[in-house]
Image 1 (tube, each protein chain N blue to C red):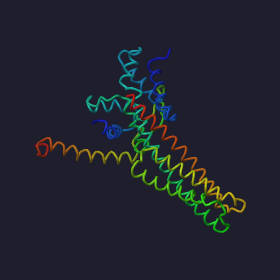
Image 2 (image 1 turned 90 degrees about the vertical axis):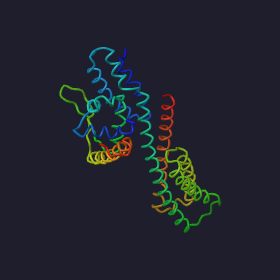
Image 3 (image 1 turned 60 degrees about the vertical axis):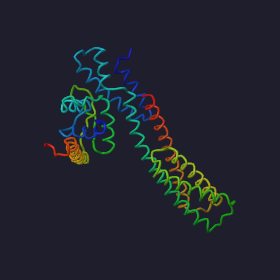
Image 4 (image 1 turned 120 degrees about the horizontal axis):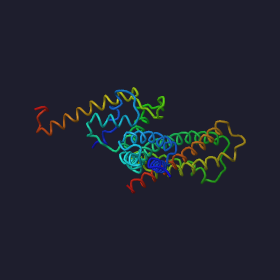
Length: 205
Length: 108
């Protein structure tokens, strides 16, 4: 049967599962703390000594909520940086495509170039507005992601018809766009997960 | 109220030298004569936050025959941050003292 400290650590690890590396590190670190505290108790060795050590430490849920709030700040910063990088690379890729397509012509329907350009402008506007007004919100980042995906998809579709003769810079820029979209998606999903967990931990407290 | 100053208190507790979480809490309790009797676990998010900000560094250490523990130490940036927070706190607490003392500089 698991002891008081082991049970507490299992709970804490579960509450911190929004960041598995943090959960591993903290449970290992806190385990040493709890055994130190239990051994310093006059009733050691006994379950009462372990229980008092755990009580003095505080509720796992409250500690996890503190970590979750910090994790949201960190993840939010990372996600905005990823968005900035994605917008910059997408802009460069778009300019390269326009320069190149200017030479080979653009026979696609009128809709695709419009999506390519205006979805990007929408991402830029929502991103700027989100940065100033809703920096810790998930929604503007998710909208930006969708708009960038639409812009890049339209851009690649445009260029794809002429892919055989595409210069290396255009291809590399497209690869960069796709890689950064992957990174941005990863961070947006991560931010959503941490925000949900923080809200849940705060609600239950 | 204490929570708002926890980061500065943790930095100050590490000024004397590197320490692990349990020792930091004991230092805080002893130095404050038991006034800062906060739940021990609240120190760990602060330690992690300060480390992420580059104000603390940490490493696992296992003393001979002892338990493996993560030991924290102040970085150069952490020492500077502590100095800044100390100055800000002295200014703030001086102003509060003056106000609570009916506008007379403390000690009156």
